[in-house]
Length: 268
Image (tube, rainbow, N blue to C red; front, side):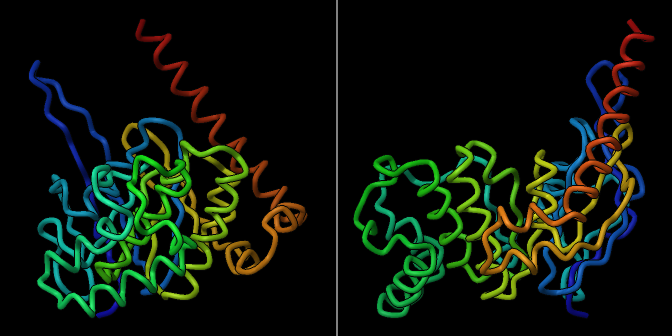
């Protein structure tokens, strides 16, 4: 079966003092191949924990992840990760960073170079391929991280706050690039963000998660990602439904944060 299935995932972290933290509880979701999912919620709702379980970095306490009909049991090239900080090899050139995965697979140099040059064209960095990573701006480094991820030809791209450290203008350009890559490659993408606007722009499907324990509070099916492909994202934000949904979600998260603060004050 093609696609990603998150089946009744729960995650409990046992602490040295004998207590435990229930990070996730009974999270289930089916994601068809090629869908773009954004996930947001207040701090402590388990967004990154869920992403790390899908990546295979963590084994859930209960439940399982199934990708294309087989169970996920650890990290694999079929799932690529893009972190908030690019996690690049700073001493290597842009070209060598993007080509690292194919080289580790033993791909022929001519084939590797063809893939690398194509991806650097796609992300607009062909003229910078001989530059060292430390010479690039933050936005350029994230472009390299995206290209390096795509070079491994994953079925699913997992993005953990990949644009959070960028300035507003660079972030908007990168949002447009993510939509372009999604549409051109047909990859399944799961993106974690703290920005409601970003979640609306980049989420064909959007999950709002609630904390303690982390669980799906509400799901939205949205038109804005499709609208944003090849269009000025500032125009998309002017859509009346965009503004209405943004305010609804902001109110939802605000209420959750208020509830969390109330619990903390009661326990103080």
